[in-house]
Amino acid sequence: MKGLGVSHSTDEFEVAAEMSHDGTLAPACARRIQEVLDSAGFVVIPGILSSSEADEALALVRAAIDDPARTSAGFASETDSLYRRRDFCPMASSPEVIELSATLCQRLQEVLKEYCGRSRSVLEISTLTSYLGSSHQYVHRDPYGALCMFVAVDEVTAEQGGTVFVPRTHMYGGAEMQFDGKGYLLMELFRRACNWKILRHNLAKLWRIRQTGQPKLSPGEFRDRVFSRKMDAHQPNLARFLLGKTYQFNILMLNPVALWQMFRYRRIIDESFSMVQTVPAKGTVILYRSDVLHAGPDNNSERPRYIFSMSIARDIMHPGQWEYGYAPHSTLRAHPLSLGDLLDMKPKARERSAREARVLERG
Image 1 (tube, helix red, strand yellow):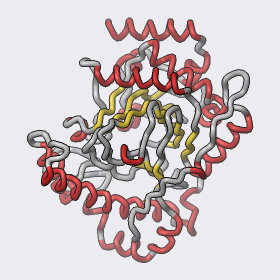
Image 2: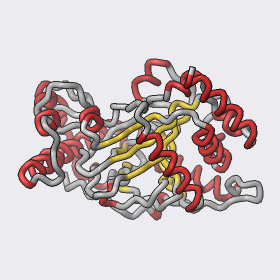
Image 3: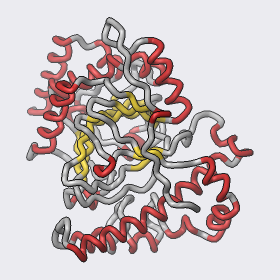
Image 4: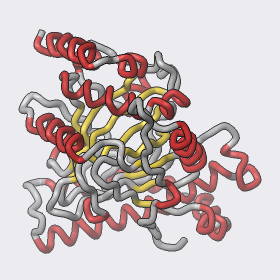
């Protein structure tokens, strides 16, 4: 297999926002977004939020992170969260957060309604923040059945670790019939090959950090990230990797049959799949199907990477699956929202609903 070969060109997957007089996407623009999302499994939409709106959203993200009563979601990497290399933080249903969520859904409604019914649940509203020294996530899929939204509330650079996607690896009906019925097999072989390189990348990076002391590691951090037996799906944890207990990637996934298949199909894999890193400008929204292969790269910048995130169910979702991959704030659990709720909210209605959620949070 060749190197990761990550491309930074997203022109093929970008559709600039064109708005109608009512503040929603123009029909032709919405159709183009749907075409790219259907084809690639993700789409990059610059210009959904203005600079001032993005600034307001960034202030909400920072307030959620700075809240001493906040909760953390560990599914990105429990160890990264423990040592504050990442901060995946569910956001409370405050008036401002609901207002922002409703604004985004209303502007994107011509696309969202094509994939999510009005009754479908808002699975989570959160901030995804990464800091200097974080690990590169393994290439993975989120739990099936959701449409996810990343909002760049600040400029994102490649050095900060914009999300990487593998175009055309989403699991639409009949996707496995590609490549003479080997579609899913080849996707999985590509994923394993990428994750082997990501494992080596993370280990080399941690060793370099340990040798140079930059950035400074906390006491016990090197051990926990490399040798700990604690559960963590995205760390380069050699103990769990060798024991076959890191479910995103472990030694059992490099068994002789898999290695032979990687060699046998290497040409078609190299020609058919590649990784694309998104570097979204401030105010950009990325929509993606939860079943497309993707990963959060490591942040190699002194600047944190801030992302506002929301996930909406495309179908009914079993509570176990919901808990497995999403982390709704307690206020969202107590006061659930559907896509229709957000689409129907007027400014006063949004404020009233958010006020009710805040009362529930305090109570």
